[in-house]
Image (spheres, rainbow, N blue to C red):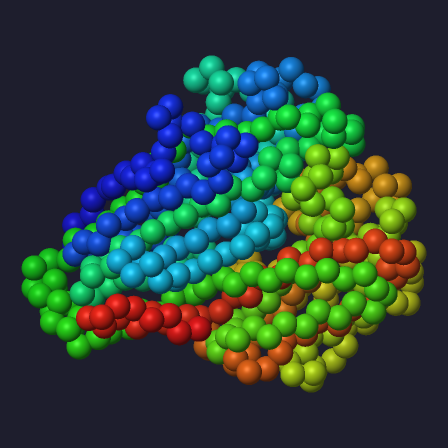
Length: 437
């Protein structure tokens, strides 16, 4: 097969090439037309220029308090990633709260060195709360008003093992990729905790494009694919589904009807609900549930269930805090299962998490910023159902549940962002495509 590079500009680009949530462009749309070729999903990159400005259009360096999250950086601006068939408009994958998904992914699959080297070049990630302000928020960049980036878009479809067929007859019929931007209120915040002085600050993109590689099958293989397409064929891929709920009790129960037949793992992260879309707080933090006074609501017991029965763990996880409430170190069973839910624990060779940055300090010094080492807090819970056969567990007609006993003693709702990793199948036929979850 021969490889070619493609570059696609947004179909809804403005006349000056600038796109921002504040100025009424909340969705960026790219169209990869149907063609007799394969798309290499892992090669897809979103490239362009990124800058942060105050309400008068002046760079953020004019405001000493204005900053953003260093771990997610440019990823914090993506609220949703939607992938559809260009021919039929059928949704193939839709990840809501994509920035929260990436907050967990980046913390558990990339180490500190990546945060200051390759990820810094690609997504402008800097694992230091002051460095992200100096280098990205306040930087004028090499174009006078922006920083260049080259962002991969991790998701089930793009990170699968096989190339994506773009043909109308034996594939998805082209792709429609939508990047939904996050509100400025959830991307930018004030280091001082006072949001009024940065109330009009916003971020913007310029010169955006999508680049990727495509493969052209040799003539004989193309003929075979076209004949096979007349009879119908299938394409299996991984997918990510997202869910949202809140808890506000010492006995927190999370229960969802997933409607999915091949679930591989589930993981979730937390943030105080009042900190979302609030310029006084970092909306991308992933820390332990907290009480209204900022004290940590440690998890004393954790149970994962399928239809009310314990699964895949046939026991309750009784954490170290159930025996020693003064212990600040996160329980190793919670940490291991969380990491294993995102990437197989034996295969995970690098991460930026450690006992020092998985729990918010008791002195409450990190309420608004990520002053903890190595990019800030990175706590979450999760469990893997199948890391061996890679076929998953059926939750199509059975509920998934998480029961947490924790010392949440005050009226302080906690938002839970849950992500489910599962297998999906695309069925192609002459009349269109069907997604089977």
